[in-house]
Amino acid sequence: MSVTVRVPAKVNVQLAVGAPRPDGFHDLANVFLAVGLYDEVTVTPADELRITCSGPDAAKVPLDATNLAARAAIALAERHGIAPDVHIHIAKDIPVAGGMAGGSADGAAALLACDTLWSTGAGREELLAICAELGSDVPFSLVGGAALGVGRGEQLTAIDVGGTFHWVFAVADGGLSTPAVYGEFDRLTAGTDVPDPAASAALLDALRTGDATALAGALSNELQPAALSLRPSLADTLAAGTEAGALAALVSGSGPTTAFLVADAESARKVAEALITSGTCRNARAAVSPAPGATVL
Image: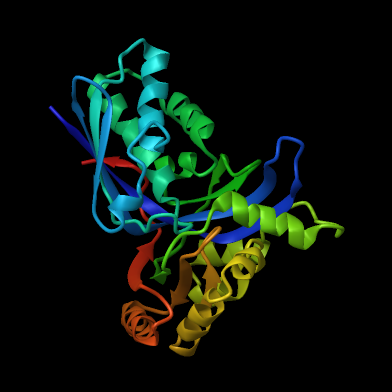
């Protein structure tokens, strides 16, 4: 028997970042939107825990105990007195190290898949608690849709979305380290008064009404200056997508993937083609949001 779980990527339509906390994390107001780019994670009983991976940039995915999918299996097994002896196969389609929570998605998917395979009876709250232990973005990967994440992003409140939003995501060459981007944020804001993060009322209203033009005017990512400082070439990608007709452009999370909000599917096709032709990115992918969270297939 095996269990396969499909899990979406995410885009941060707002990422407000507070000053560093004593524990090294930052308080956030993080508005997540799940988008229709998916990884599929399959777990099968095995003699020992092992991980394999296929798909774009699979060679960049760690296949040891540092992988969030492996950590998820171990965490659930320890809680229920089970040996985590499964083969976890990750079929990647979410960009690797791209600021779209691909690793977090795999952790959430493996957790749900192992829970299903082992029939642990863990409730949603237990699964979300394990997700929060694994990482700040993992709980949202489990629930999907749209949500406001506060604390370090792991404390979620669901958000209503009143329509479908169309996106194009430009995949950059290489990754960006999330800790490095936060470190650069701290360097750039040193000596300034960093306000407490808060969700934008205009952005939440745009999501609720399904108004793409209003959402375009409200998108924000306070990590973007740090990502651009570390990877100045991303400015060329953002400009190329905007010139091709995107309603708005921003770095997705800590980057280096860039996200372009567009009016409709035809606009998405044109912007994706223009981005690929521009030579400022490795690939460009169209997707819609919101998307469901981790789902057993």
